Image (cartoon, rainbow, N blue to C red; front, side, top):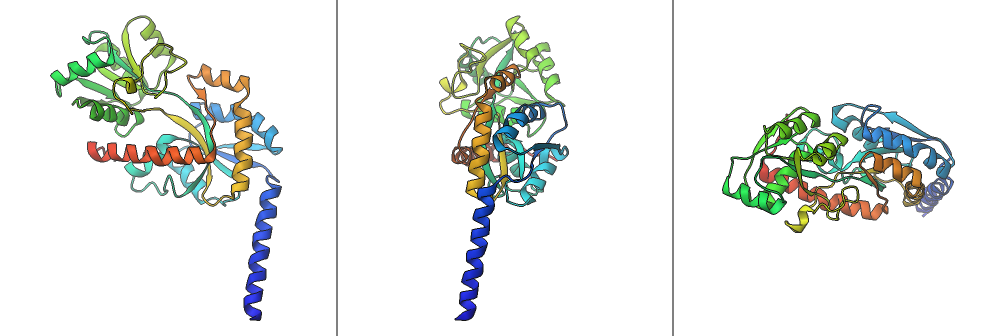
Length: 322
């Protein structure tokens, strides 16, 4: 009986200490892992959020660039960090929904190993065609592609890239068959569709791309977000032709699985306060991004839903990477 009582007391003290620790959070600096090198989009967003989040948390936010393995190294480190809220990772949806499926040795589970903190931002995918393609809208392109199976090429930044899988999702939804032509990175894909090496490109927008669209050198057929894209008003969505279609890259903050809900709530509150800043929203817009906040629950639901979609696309298309 005495032994049982001691166990109950020890458990109660442990729970009390955890509650007090969560209530006192944060009592020191918070580390934010960025899975890529300095200067990229993810790094720029992290540094834009650094000052407002520090003010909201009352503690320093230390950014640590942990590049390597196409983001996998930072994800592994975050997954294995103590679940106390003092280590976060700045992710894109590909790292949690696609990489663990494509890379059997990724070393982490995008759903089980992390606790969602909140969304940060989102962009969309542009569906653009070479100027000589005899189609002026998405429906016309689909009709044309159906009449020419395996004759139209599409570009991607490489096998397993978000653009590659978005193109496969589009082809599956439209019931068309195209030829995949992979390139090394996004910039060569734009040159390819400009030169007519490929007929179609589904990729995230860039300043160069929008200038070519404005000049009529490539055709913008649609955007991959479910809602009209505010930075390109008047452009139809793919879902207006193929209901339910969504290809929308987004960014978010995650903590290690098991992080106390009270800690997650404080981190989410600091993040959402920061994203409400007009200066932050404008800075994101300048990079073709929309600041987009969420609750942790909304983020988890989205990850679970989209992970299933991309997993199905990968299995149906047989996409593999070395």
